Length: 367
Ligand SMILES: Nc1ncnc2c1ncn2[C@@H]1O[C@H](COP(=O)(O)OP(=O)(O)O)[C@@H](O)[C@H]1O
Ligand SMILES: [Mg+2]
Image (cartoon, rainbow, N blue to C red; front, side, top):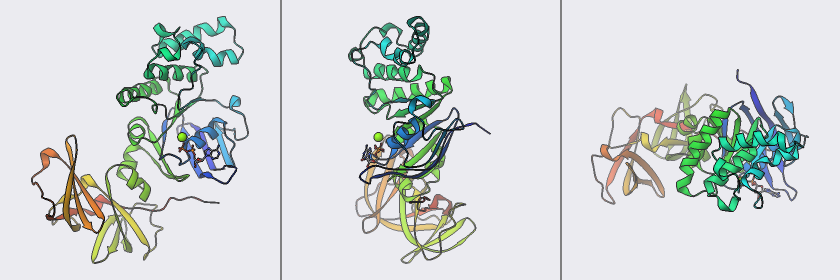
């Protein structure tokens, strides 16, 4: 089994004044893993990161790093290093001086520091720029300085708060690849906070999706995309269609959900079978798994009215209104299209039972 670098057990944070920033946070992060914490602004991501780094006190719960309980230890006694959102470089120091900072704080002599600093600077490809100041660097170069400065102390875990947040859109894609490559080469654990679905899903081995101070789901990008657990995740990640209904019955891995005159068949994942018959439930169907027209081999069907088409490169999403204010997205490759719709056209939309998944509320202890 892989070594666990960080574990958080029932961690809560309530700020003075009463804001509950983190509620019942439980997670394990393996050594060498690239973990992303993804969620909208204000959901508690930075607070979690700061508690792991020791910059914020934990209200309740325990945090272990490398098997050691660090909950009550200061940052200097934790094997973590933090890269801040705005890079927070020292403006009056050169690249070299920024990078050497933490070694200097550790009391190393100039001679001890120099070879390590140069090596670090070389590894982020800044040798030529070592004597410049931050304001003489591009955003991408500043980011590399921040990375070098955070890594020089050889932390076991690097904590990154929106590391690409202040970069231009065009630079971000390149930096995503670079950061990921770095993490792989160094083999250290990265915990990255981001509100960007694209950053989280494309860079991380595992993603923790958060909303409103609680974990909604932990899983690989693929798992979160293919098997959203909660209504929030289904809504936030990918292009999913949400349906509401009442759970009528279930049998093995299939549930039957009634909505008005319609009965729908959905997947009922293991662990989600606590939901009781008669309860109001939501299920989600991926837009790329629904089809226009009647398909006899597909268990589910609704009728809707064509509204519009959204274009996204080679993908097109046809949007149909199936109930007042309830829109269903049908995503397909442009090359696969066989029909052009006019506004107001009536059409059936079909999908197989396996394309739908029953959702549940997040599983947390609120107090
Ligand atoms: N020092 C603080 N004092 C009081 N409330 C805070 C403090 N820091 C953050 N909060 C609140 O805690 C919640 C979570 O904040 P934060 O962790 O920064 O969210 P995120 O990083 O996901 O945007 C927000 O409601 C925020 O206003
Ligand atoms: Mg934040």
